[in-house]
Every structure is written in C-alpha cells, then in structure tokens.
Image (cartoon, rainbow, N blue to C red; front, top):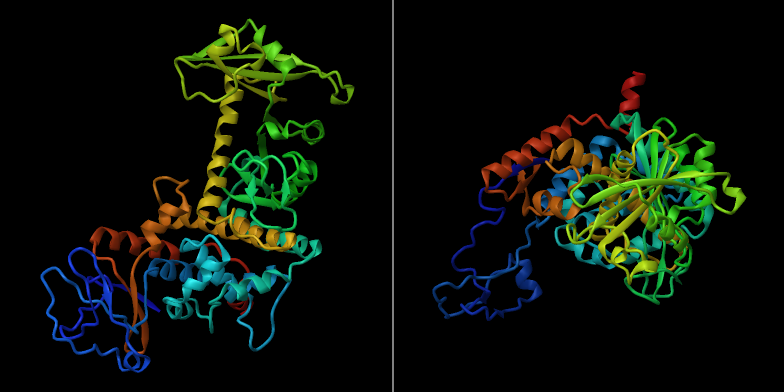
Length: 511
C-alpha cells in the first residue's frame, strides 16, 4: 500500500452531464433517488431539462472507495504493522476465535479501535463504519472488518467471569506494558492513583447508587486507575458505584508495583479519597515517599484556624506545616501535614476549601485551604506542594479518556465484559496513542488530547486507487505544510523501534 497526496482533495471532477440532485442557493435540497440498476451502471443520472442556477452544485453518490478518515487508515495501519500488533493480540486475549467464518479477534479489535479513533463513543457507532470500510480492510490487511455492533459485543460478552479479565490484565502487563515501558526507557517516575465516576443509564451489573456529583441519585461505576507521571496508564479496575475511592487500594497498589517493578517509584501522589490508614501504612512499610491530599475535617479546620506560622511564597499564597497524631493508635504516631492557604480576593480561581466551621468569620471568607500528608521530613512545605501539583494532570488524562476514547460510554450488561473492554481502551489504545504523540507526531504539547489529534491527522479525505498492480491511498491534503508534516510523521513511524511479539523478527534472529 502506498500513500500519495491528491491536490484535489481526493475527489475527482464530476462530468458536466451527471446530474442527480440540485442545491438551490438557500440550501433547499432536492435529492433524486436512483434505482439499484442505475447505481450498478455507474450511476448514470436521470435526464432532466432543468438548468442549474448560478451557485448550484450537483450531488451524486459514488461507488468508488472513498473515506473521510484517510489519516486513520494511513497512520494506524502502518503503526500496527510496525509494532507487530496482530501477533500481540494472539498472545494477550485469552478468548480466541478459530472458526473459518469468524473475522478473528484482531479484526474485532481493529474495528473497535478505528471506531474510537474516528470519534465513536459507543458500540452502535461501529454500524456507521461501512462507509469506506473496504479501504480499512485493504490497509490493515484483514479479510473483513466487523460492520455491526453485535459482532463486537458478542465477542466481549464471552468475558463473563472474573478469571478471564484477570488473565487478560496479567497478559497485558506481561506482553504489552513491560515492553512498552522498556522502550520508553523510564527508570524513575511518580506513581499516581485516581478514580472516576461513570454514570450508567441502564441496569448494568455493578451500576450502583453512590457518590455521583454530576448526576445525583443515578447508578454509576467507579473504576480505579493508576498512571505514571510520564502519562502512561499502568492499571485499571472496574468497580461498583457504591465503593469509596480507597476501596481495595492496597491490593491495587501492590499489583501495580508488580506491573512496573523495573521502574523506581519516586513518590506516590493521590487525592483526598486515598487518605486511608492501611494505604499509608503500606507505603511506609515499603519505604515509598508519598504526598496525599487530606480532606479538611472539622478537627483539621481547628488546627488550621489556629495556625500562626505561615510562609509567603507568592502573591496571595502562604504555606505552613504541623504534626498531628490520630487518636486511633493503629496510625502509629505523629505525621507531617502541609497546609496551603490562598487569598480569595487576590486569587479568585484558587483551589481548595473554605473552613466551614468559621464561614461566618472574616478568616473563613478570606482564604481557601489545601491540606496534604507526607512522610518527607526534609523538604520545605513549598517543595512538598510543588511535588503534588503535577498530579492534576491525571484529571486531564481521565477527561481525555472520557471525551476522546469513550471511557464513559462503552459498557455492557456484564460487569466483567465491561471491565475487559475498558481495560483494552485504557491500557492498550490509550498507551499506543501516547507513544504515537510522543515519538511520531512530535507535537509541541505532549499532553495533546485525542480530539485535537483527530482533527489534525486523522480526518483526511482519501481515495483508494491503483498504480499498476499496487494499491494507492490518495490523501486529500492540498496544503503543502500539512503534506510535509504528515510525510515526516510517516517517516518517523517507519523508524520507530517499538516492537512487541513479532514472528517475523524472531525468525530473522533465529536465522
């Protein structure tokens, strides 16, 4: 498959006498429907004596292989071929299909990924992929792609028990995450934990009423995720909506450490939902530095209110510290707390909470406070706050997963089937796109979201044609700068060194 740029936006000039519809100046459409026999005869137009007015454009349907997602076909077909993704799928997914009539697991994953990359946010959007589906089949080298949502959901419904999703997660860690992180050459990084609420509108398994600030009273799921500071997603658990953030965090943390055991953990960062005694004791037992946000309960509000020593670090920002020992002896002694207060008048967009106990006093109205616990006893309070602040990027990644990758919309009746598909999107597709952004696209903003990448690189009209015996995908880019940018991305993709399990490479090494 070759890729060339067509200066006429991949749309050929229409013959003058082919007229099947008219567009008046004020956007009134008259579409003349053709019979099946006429479409088979290259869609010859019906004879009409009407003359087009000035500004009118003829409309007709073309049987040629055209797609509006030429960038997706060009970039990701080469990307998957380069990294040996087909062979990787055969090793990762415990449920395989061997029927001669089956499209195969690789074909189903490609169909799902293409739908997500092209803006699909639910399984039913796969039904609209039929436009240009032949182009994707040629580019990705598959016999046929799935054209209906039932073809996809039927496969994921086979993940109907916990043992299958646990096997899938272990396979992703062993055969995908470890080679990926080795390629990224990450020796030391921060480990960040967060959870998110996904509202459900049906009777899916695990959809329970719990904390849901956006849709109060509606059932939801409450998945838990782990990220590296470099932007990679390294673990995912689906959970019921009635679980708290720290539920199962000790086991989740231990499993995540096993997934990234070759990376030295610089420190653990987490929001106030993870202010949990067992979690903190586990981190201290492992000798891991942590900075965790603390909910400002009433007894903490009193301590902050009577705090007298503050250090000004910027206009309207002051930091302080104190030690506190819980009455519960199981906490095991005093710990260091860092408090940050920001003056609302000077910083109206400041984060933090006002002290509800003192809301009627001037102090309660003047400041917003943030509180953190840490086992770092050497650095200044301001340094500790600076260590924690990059954790906010986790919120951006989760927003990208929801808006760009459809994390909040892809769900099934089965709880474990939902976990399997969301695990695939978060741990595989999101990380592959992250590598593409960092290593191939070379964007100025390394945290650029998929929606922006989609408009810049994926939404490109294309026409599949022939050049002798070779298939040629003609991309409709008329801007020379965009042509150069896309060509350079393809060149960097060709030089990409990331390779997973690839039979061809292994055979060459044996030879």
